Image (cartoon, rainbow, N blue to C red; front, side, top):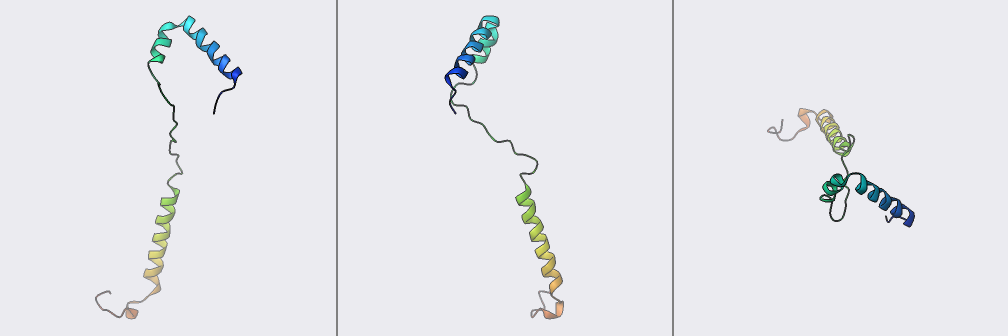
Length: 80
């Protein structure tokens, strides 16, 4: 998102004032941050909910499968 002309002029004024007040800080800051700025999303506390939901569904499915049949219903004795 581009800055408006007013916003850019305010930022330029702040930069000039900072350069007049603390040139060492401006020099130190100018050595960092060249190029395009990108933002990375920081994962939140609830970002793992899809994995947890799948795990719960698999656990319920497993319990339902184990409780739905009896050992006599299994045709192969090795499976018991």
